[in-house]
Length: 168
Image (cartoon, rainbow, N blue to C red):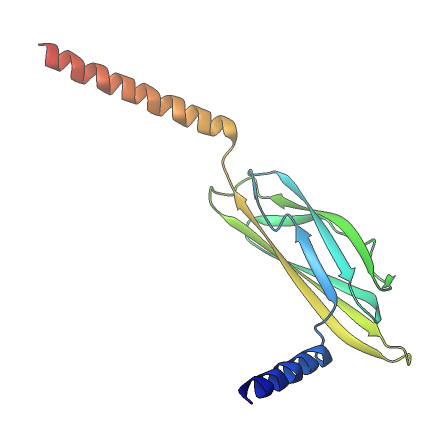
């Protein structure tokens, strides 16, 4: 009897889960997390995918940048496009880190794309998708080389000083 009740609950859960559908639209930024030097242009790819019916039309894209960076190249080749099922459109954009950016500072870019779902009866419903990308500012490689060389020199000088004191 318990097995029948559990089986009935399991089947009811499956039927309920099948009737509830998640939004098939996805917005992805690649790379999601990366590093960049001060003053560097970082190329990012924005992918908008329609993974299920109905068709969607991309209406608008908004970019919000928090941190020492600016939007250099705005993706516009997908605005107004109608995507069937399944369909994917990509666009490349660029974020420039500030030349005055400090080590460890982060630039967070949030992209929101508004779209309409085009229903079979011709009606439309509005939707939006959001993606985030994080850029961490790192020092120039030559700066790290100079810092490492300086620290090695200080270490050698200190070691020589201690060894000369021990010999006396």
